[in-house]
Length: 82
Image 1: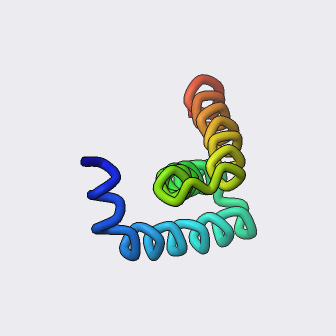
Image 2: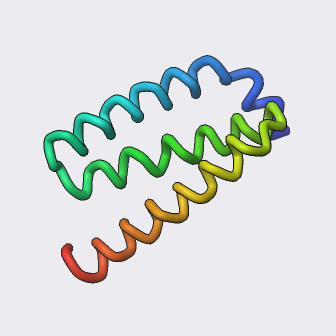
């Protein structure tokens, strides 16, 4: 069921991921911390889903690793900086 939903909305999800990636890069360059974390996490989650959809193991695991970093960064921000 989830796989069918991903297939049905693949193009829209990839376009959303592109927009999130661009916005995250702008946030990094402009030093808009922690906005870059909040934009990068959904970017990684979309690409994790696409990795499972297409069985691209390396893409999937790289994005799982980065998603973990972003979750850590968001949690750290929530505990110490918010």
